[in-house]
Length: 221
Image (cartoon, rainbow, N blue to C red; front, side, top):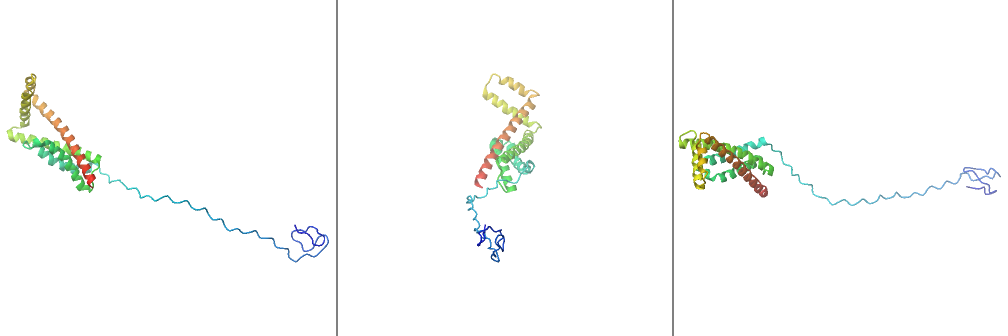
């Protein structure tokens, strides 16, 4: 608070004369002191950025549906089925059934430009095994019909095979089994049993061949 230099009375904020003694004061009041300007505070240092990591690799592959696998599976099934159905080559049926799945996986890679994933390889093996069994069954029927010159030559072939194995077993029940096999209903039973055994064997070996081939191709590429 400013005071009069003559009477020491308190002065109002803006005064040109003392209100008590009338002493003339300065023309302009002393300017108010400007507030001290402080430099703006510097922002805190930014936290160090975490070390950059390479972007995650995208392992997604284009989807391949079951219908798109029919082509490779069908071609492999035809090739393996013809070889497995010919009587002179049927002794190597394990090789043909393994090759059926392997060939389907190879055709898949040629068509789609990549190796089959494990579930795709298993599906390829199942489809190619089914096609291979169907072709092998038809080829076996036609081949034995031509060789034995009768329509049901496959039935006679299976009866001969069963008879030879029953003689080797030398079992007391072999005669009863042969009576059933040689009966009128024994032929269809033999064909059905052979077909089911051949089907499951073809499917299992073909899936195994497809999985093995798929794993080898994925490791190499």
